[in-house]
Image (cartoon, rainbow, N blue to C red; front, side):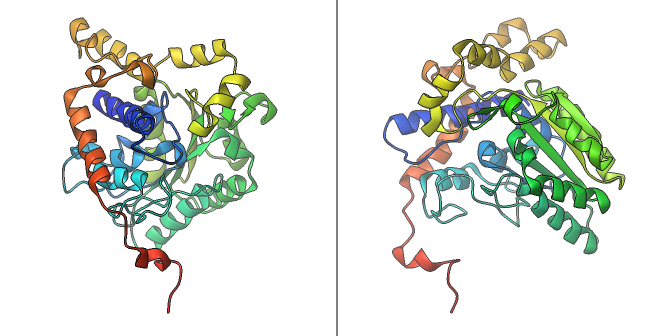
Length: 340
């Protein structure tokens, strides 16, 4: 889990640095400071379970089934080469250079295509697991949604449908306190978004989104609930968005969010919290905990020495593959758009 936290963080840091170097174009949507949500929620799933990520969850595409080993060809998840090729808009990407970010998916890898439609992950997930049930399967689906998306009508329609039909859909609410530029107090009248579950008679759990073990525990409670045939649930993971909505919003975010709020939100770094827990439990020595100090640093303050060598090597393989890959031929322009 700690290595996966490092990997998700380094993915974020490396892409920011590559863009600063002029080797990458397009918008980046940072998952910095929210890595525990992805690692904790994915870690206990079966290979055959589905996931439905959103724009802030790009590491989920290569972290799915990573417990089997990042380079294991038998794991059911995307390779780092595929994900980086997507970011660079190259031919080796699942989207064949359509978009440069997270609008990708894979039926083979059981990843529902990401969508920009807020809460649009949930009805898609409900349909996928309903079809799976009708075909005799036993898969569940974990969806990811920002807290702002819970105000959308489709959020409530989909949760209601999943509740009525007892579909195994686990909805993760990534509460990072800001819906683009709107603070929570202007979008919701209660303190806990998990209370959205009460109106549908389903479990609504709250996890410390900075503690990967707490996320894992809460999600696994919901996994057991779903596998027992009891239907959907919601897990609110309380976190904080380290940067702007996207890197196009970073300068503006520095104006609409007070500096002290940002510093407080980023002070509980998921990597630091995991290290502390491991030291307390005797799983990591105090000396080893001082190695690879990526925690509590922004992208500009880190370098490769702040990350385990295997993490740097793995992501470098993906980056170099993407940079060296060709763009698709122009003749592919109509692919998936027109049919004769």
